[in-house]
Length: 258
Image 1 (spheres, rainbow, N blue to C red):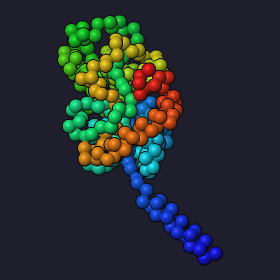
Image 2: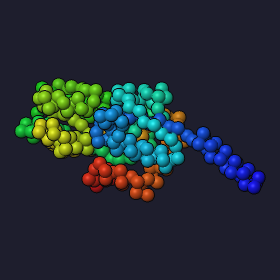
Image 3: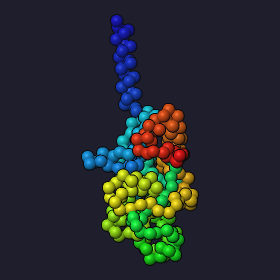
Image 4: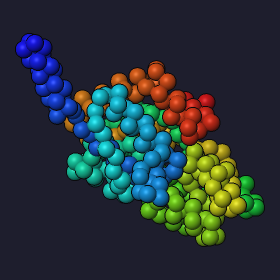
């Protein structure tokens, strides 16, 4: 009997010790980029990015919490150790690699253009759009694309994608550049987007602007965490977890864009 009690005591102590030593990680996301990341009416963070992040944490047997961070400060926040990783639909670019390290892509991406319905725009050259007002979210590859391709246009930058959309609905923009999936979602599912706007032109897939896909950013010294995230990503792709989350938000597999 004493041996049984001792065994139970040791077992309980082991479980408590394991619980006490469980790794805790923090995910930083924007919370203003539906359907990838957003805050609901109660302030809870959700979306594809958030669910993928939590699935990766579960695979790594880590406790994770998610916090919101404005896009303009999201990389500085990581470097300042405000969180351990960024999962916020961030394109992997050479410029960003100078500040952070990226995991393997967890989905592919393209950019696109949107215009008010009936705009009649068919020529998307710099010459044709000279003097036009083009919107994009500041600090994004979309804003870099707009500035590089349309130097003679009036480029307006906004804190969030929702702000870009709002100005287009209100007739203040002739065109906007954005990530393809969120803009497609907006013009096909959101009342304002459906009434206002449509996608125009060809998808932008130039690696100069869309990078090597969308990755999770970690601090440059956190090689172990990056490799563990890569292993966890392979695991949730293999066991079907990724696909279940994908199907909740999209009609195509965003990992392959097929």
